[in-house]
Image 1: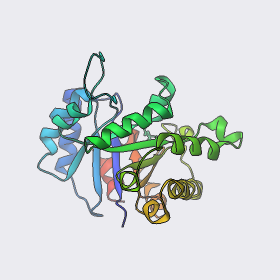
Image 2 (image 1 turned 90 degrees about the vertical axis):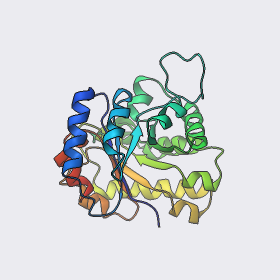
Image 3 (image 1 turned 180 degrees about the vertical axis):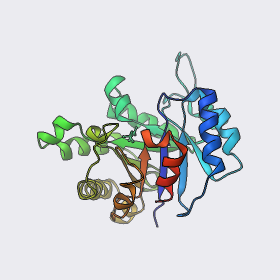
Length: 249
Ligand code: PEP
């Protein structure tokens, strides 16, 4: 049985006081009715203080990015062992904002995933098409390249340790959600691609999250789709009550 994982991506939004307030509110009202894995991904500067609040709960910690080198003269970068040392179990890799603003390529992201796995940090590998790519009928081609190039060279066992997040770029932070049927169609396509990189049984075990304006009022229908195994939540994870409503869909 594949895991259901819901992760909150706090992006570049919380200073330490705000992060502590958010995680305290989350913890105070925390219930996990569906017994899923719940992850919060604060900015780097909040990781340690958030970890200290959640370490006695089953809420897990994730980072939003990581460099692929293990150490060295890479000013401004953060290594996997640094993330481990502050309690991270997950790391978001290749969020569309990183692809767009920091020009991260599938090849670079492949290296980041490799290093994360080496350190037993679960990568949440983001893929998804832009609006113009969807409108030009190229969504599946773009996703195929992101999956095949980003995940090249992994064994079936390694692939099972990776979480995929399908995030159509046109649905991120826009209030537009892919319809459950649109999302399911792409998730099933991604699972098919994963089977070509390994085998059908392995692909069935890989968690594929949906991300893009997930809210309390659309999460239930999205989660009822057979190939949607969780969510990567941006805006709605910045308020404890909406994130709690999402995880208790
Ligand atoms: C995201 O940042 O990954 C995301 C899906 O954002 P939002 O939920 O705000 O669309």
